[in-house]
Length: 254
Image 1 (cartoon, rainbow, N blue to C red):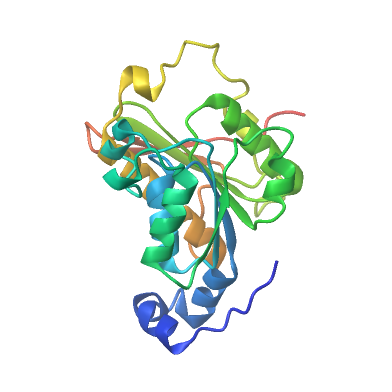
Image 2: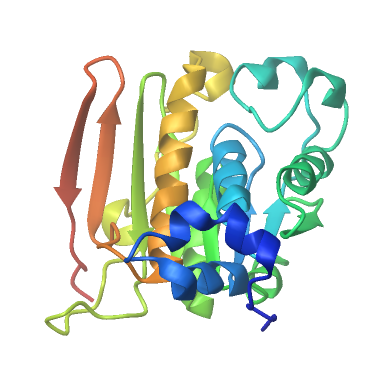
């Protein structure tokens, strides 16, 4: 899963604002080029994740989604256009990525993430970002990422609120304690029907942009090794109050 991470003249010019940052520099940009990132869902969260990671120069972006673009998606799924209605979301997203940055290789997985294909797909990537909109997929993604030891950036949105965290349960913290898993944060999904879907409750379109962009930021931090990722911390955003808060969580008893 290695690629030539050398930057050509056009890439150096394109990523100049990254390279001038001492924390990133040419070495960090080369890490981005060498990275293989899978994004689950080309919807409200996946759209800004894919756009910002493509713009940042992540070398290989995989996108998995089995849905097609509908008119009601366009209020928040900004990687798609009106002309894409009826087109598979993975196809529309890859077309947008190619138009944004020809230095990025975009891979389509036009399928639903399931127990039978998750491990095989995940093993081709260095990092997974979950932008799904249902609990079954979130738990499957978290369990699979833990099993194959791939970091996972997971996010979720409600009507006017959202959250982001980073999962690396196969590693330990600076004190040698195992990092928490998704099930340490959310031991079990809520009963069916308790949490309404986006279609039932609605969601403010710009909110998905905020949370998706935060997911992209965490991915860039993980790839380049800068900053402190949200491991063991759940970042919460209340859009109506314009407030952020953080909840710390730990590994549960075995």
